[in-house]
Length: 481
Ligand SMILES: [Zn+2]
Image 1 (spheres, rainbow, N blue to C red):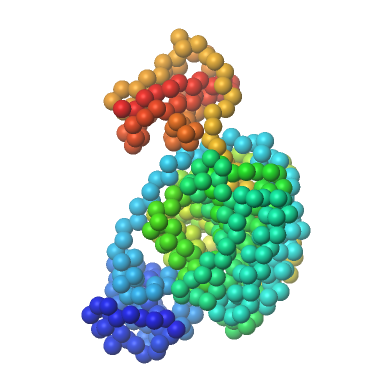
Image 2: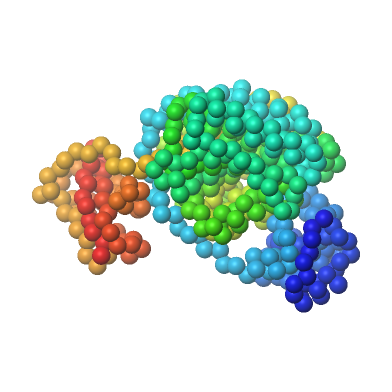
């Protein structure tokens, strides 16, 4: 089991008081859940400290199992911590989302439309069945590790089939689970150090015994979804300008262990991640709408961007689907690992709160419950829309020269002022690009006169790009001192 290194008196005290069993471990969870468990099974959990809505606990595997089965939506409901100190520092940490340097824009209609036509629902079905056929992918069973080794080979073969030399796949070995995670990297051509990441978890669990945990919806569906999304990007010869990573995590079901270790490493290496999107359970159509954006432990601006993508690409026609919003819970899936490290994260989910697949974490979580991968296909579409629009070169498009006498754009005291009152067209949007072509600020504005605060921009040259409702474009260079 885990080696607990006794480095402080606090830990010594905790161990001496609570070391009932070497399988006990530290975790953080919602305070109310911790108190409820303590009341129901007092011998299985100790609440060590509480702060705000969170608690640090030391608990037995059976307490973890009870919590896992009890929480309302899905996921473990707690976040594993490898030591008391790590647990304490995590609840004392203030999460500040480092606002991405990237402004989200939608410009790639042509490429996205091309990719959407290449989607093959049969590939998603086949992949879900392939993963279901391991019988179980529980993190400490041989099948879990085998599934990771095989997925690496599958992703490598896929990249090779499309002749992609910009792609590499690696196993990521963990400290707190024998199962590795799998990471595919598609190196960005222009901004290789800027990342957009999508992921899901490869492991499965069952409350009826982990030797029988097919995990078709939870979460073979998510892995199959992101795999088909990437395959279509390859088929369409999409070469990202930012680096794309696709992750299949180990040991989500025991407290977000795989994603937690990876997100911590990326964070401590200051990896610049523009946005993260989680795909966990995509193939059970249980609610009135199709995609539910989870609004807790996610970022509202990224959720807003995913809604804009659906409004833009999926409002009507062959690729039409709808969305709503819902809540998940504490530690409900791997997006929380990234969110907790200050990264922008989102989690589009298969159904609304409580209407998700009722068979998860049982032997009945099989593909036959859905019988088709039609629902997962909608998530694969959202995944490619997200990846194409975020990994692109933002660029400046469709320039039509407009006489400067017709408008005013200038900066004063770190504020951009604009006035198009004498210009015939109305303004549709204003985007400010840095000199490297990254969109930094994007505002939808129908007013013809106004201002934008620029205080958070570092000094340098920027391009103000104004689009009119008549699709004319005005570009003006500005200088920030
Ligand atoms: Zn899951």
